[in-house]
Image (cartoon, one colour):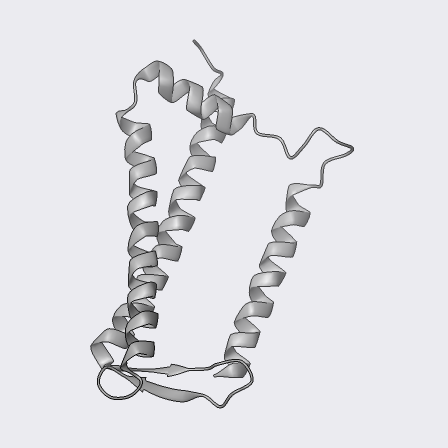
Length: 140
């Protein structure tokens, strides 16, 4: 099976973007968990309540353990998943690799109506991320 170099490049770029975004997300989550673990305390902001300090020992240790371990486990899982996706692509047979890259390159938004331009989707996602960062900064 032969795929054109343009489609192959598009598939490789999409696979690399997915893996790098997942890796970055996993590293960020794992870092947040590890930071709380190494310091021994975290600030918990429950909705509708005053923020409080949860420590590794004491009456709030369960909250501390759940939040820290959840961040570290989810971050680790995302890191492993991103590395496994790249390794599975690299270790696949040539025919299977070309099928995967072709499938990634030919993904279309949907068959109904006109598709939304990619730049618009990217703009909306960046704005949404900006709102989340602003809200996190205001809450801190």
